[in-house]
Length: 325
Length: 280
Image (cartoon, rainbow over all chains, first blue to last red; front, side, top):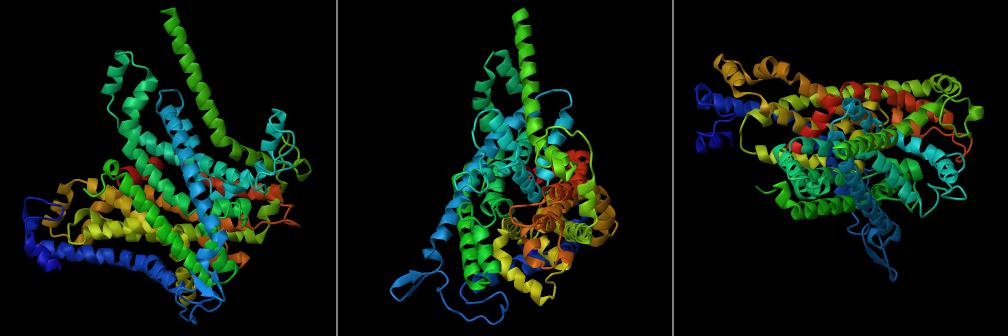
C-alpha cells in the first residue's frame, strides 16, 4: 500500500517540500512511521469503540443478560419485534420507548434552539468593548466547567419544591401562589431539565459564536456605521449570514450532545418516564433490569436514530458546512 | 450633540446592565451552592441571598467520610491517567495525521471524527463485556480505558489541527540532519506543541473529571467510585430528605479546582474548544 502510494504519486510529497526528503526512501520511512505512530491510537479506538459497538449490535439479537454475557443465544429480531400469541411484542411496540424517543428530540430541539438564541446574545455582548471583559468571559465559562452532576444537584436544590430559592423568588414576585414541584410535576419536569441544560451550555455556544464574530472583517461594520444603518439591520444582513457556518458547527456539536443526554436528566428526575430519554431507557434495561439483549436493541436503535439525525442535518446544511468538498 | 451624547450614555448603561444580568445568571447557582454549603443545618431551609455567618460543619462532615476522600483520589488518578494516555497516543497520531501525507489519512480522520460523535450508551454493553473480560470491572483502570473513547478522538483532532500550523522548515532541517520521525517528534515538535498539549490536556482532564455514565455503570462499591457518582449517590434517611448541606459542600469542593483552572486558563480553553470545532 505504501509502495504503490509512493510510486503512484511521487510528487505528492507528505508535508511537501522542494528538497532532499522527497526521495523515496525517506518518504517510505515516513509513511511507515506514520502507520506505526497511528497504530496504538487505532488499536485503542478499536478496543473501546469499534469492537464494543459491534458487540452491542450482536447482543441486540441475543437474549444475553448482564450476569453472564458469554452465554447468550441468538434469538433473531425478538428484542425488536416479535409476534407471539396474537400480539406484537418487543422494543418497537413499547410505548415507553417511543415516549423516550420523543422526549429526546423534544429536549434536544428546544434546548439547542434556546442555547443558540441566548448564545448569540451573550457572544454579541462579550464582543463589545467594555471594562473587565476578560473577567466577564472567564465568569461566563463557569457553568461550562462545573460537572454536569454538580450543576444538576445545584439546580435540584434551587428548584426544590418546598425550600427552593426559585419558588421563593417567584412567590415573592407574585407570579405563583403555591410552590411548584419542578422536578416531580409531569408538565414542568421537562422544562426544569431544559433550563439546567441551557444554563450549562450557553457558554459553549457563546464562545464558539464569539470566535466566529472575531474573525469577521471590521471594514463592513465601519461602512455600515458611516451609512447610519441600524445595528439590528446590520446584524441580520451582515453578521448573521457571516456567522452561519460557525453556528451550524456549534449546533451539530450541541445536537450530538443533547441527543445522547443522560446525566443531567438522570440526576434531576431519575427514571421518570416524563423526561426519560433514549439513553436513560437503554441504560435502565441494560443495567437495572439486567436485560443486555433488549437494552442493546435500544442502544442500537439509538445509535442509528442519532446517525440518521446527523446525516439529515449535514445534508440540509451541506452548503454552509462545506461538506463534500 | 447633547442628545447624541445622551444616547451614547444610555447605550453604555444598557450594555453594562445586560452584562450584569448575564454575570448573575452565570454565577448565581454556584454562588448559591457556596452559601448553602456554609450554612448551619438549622438555617438550611430558610432562603437567604447573603451569608450572615460562616459554618464549616458540612465540609467537616463530608471530608471526614473516607469514601468521599477516596472518590476524590480516584477521580484525580483517573483524570490524570486519561490525560497522560490521551496526550501520548494523541501526539504521535497527530504527527502522522498532520505532517505525513499517506493513503488512508482522510479515512482515519473521518473515523476519528465519527468516534467522537458516538453516543456512549451505544457501546455500553459491549464495553461492559470488554471491561469484565480484562478484569477491570469495579476498578478505576476500567474507567481510564473507557474514557479514552471520548478524550482520544478529541485530543487527536485538536493536536492535528495545531500540528498542521507549524512551519515546514523545522521538520526539513531535522530530516536533513538524518533525524528519525520519533526524534523529530520528541525534539522538534514536542517543545513547540506544549501550549496545544496543555490546552487539550486541560479539556481532557475536565471531561474525565466530569464523566458520569461510565463511572456509574462500571463501578460498584463506594471505594472505587469517582466524585460525580459519589455526589449523585449521597442520600439521606429517605428519598425525600436529601442532606442538601453536605451535597452542596461536596459539590463546591470538587468544583472549586475546576473554576480556578478555568479562570487561569480561560484563553487556552477557549482556543482549544474553538480549534476543535471551528477550524475542524
